[in-house]
Image (cartoon, rainbow, N blue to C red; front, side, top):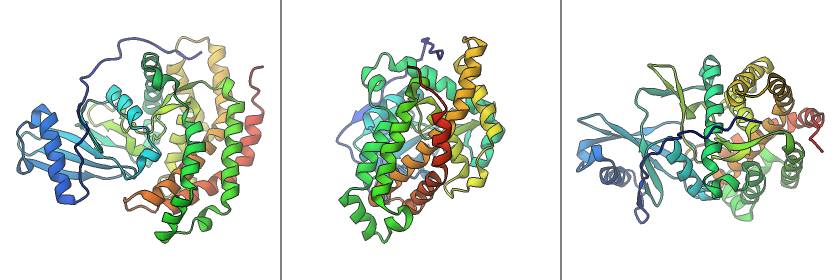
Amino acid sequence: QFLYFIGFLGTMPGPLLFPDFVIPDDEEARKAAMVRLVADSVPEFKGCTVDDCVVSVLSGGITNQLCRVKHAETKFSVVARVFGKETERLISRAAEQFWQEAFLRTYARCANGLVYEFLEGYVALEPSDCEAHRDQIASELARLHTSAAARALFHVPFGTQADFAQVALTDWVASGTSEEALKRVLERGHSVTAHYGDLDAFQGHAAELLRRIRAVAGVVPVVPCHNDLLSLNIMLSRETGAVRFIDFEYMRRNFYLADLANHFCEYAGFECEWEKLPSVEYQRAFLAKYLETAMADAPADEVAAALERGMQLLPLFALLAHYVWAAWALVQGAFSVIDFDYVSFGGKRYQRFLETYPAAYAAAEAVAAPK
């Protein structure tokens, strides 16, 4: 059993709610709206106008737009996030708000955005940085899982909602392969078949992958997972070397190995340079460090068994990562206004799935779920 500690999880003030306030699309109007929202919700910005603030775009986001709002005089900063178009097809905003408030000070929620703390003194990692911080990331991920699991015990909607694998392999696939989405992708000049091939086969793989994952469900604990632990969502303290995670919009119950496998896949970056994936030895060391924290009070033989079982099943959950981001890319390719080639990216993830699923399925079949 995993160690789920229920200690003092900390409580932060809840955000102010502005349900009718909409941050507009126009760039200048957007900046003014962000400053107004920040001034109305963050004490350090009370009474501020656009002239008192510096608003800059934070790079890297391909789901939402992130901006830093900095007080020109005091230098105090917060983050303003504007939700991506149609992202409610992919994201539960209620769940996002719940988890966001659990791990980051959140000042405001409006109809299409959030205002929350800026981690001063932290810098986002690049994919190439992750190996140097392996143990910190592994331990922090275990702490996230255990503390989130304890918190979810007292919030039934988030502790019992459908898991990420179920939602992504059904709802995301249905949305991404809908007539509306495919028409929009075509109108934007992209060919789905050129990148994904036969869509009937694509949909069939979703059903089979979900069946394979369910077959091992009895031996892989389900916990609240981040589900999007790419390097840009890992912040490193310049002063202490500690890491913190950000951006919890995809956080949902999932198999704990899925968070690890997805993190490893992200070492390839948005360019999908698969030669940069971490070695099996690296993945074993990462999982061992994770289990050292997550199973701190468990007998050594149970930890050893979890390590061996996890190594056999990580390839199966890497398939899940490849497939769900391929499905996600179809939805984003149809509806997002962010300048990113989603369909090409999704096609690369799906091709990696096709290349690796036979071996991953074979390895998973060797793990017998308890009767």
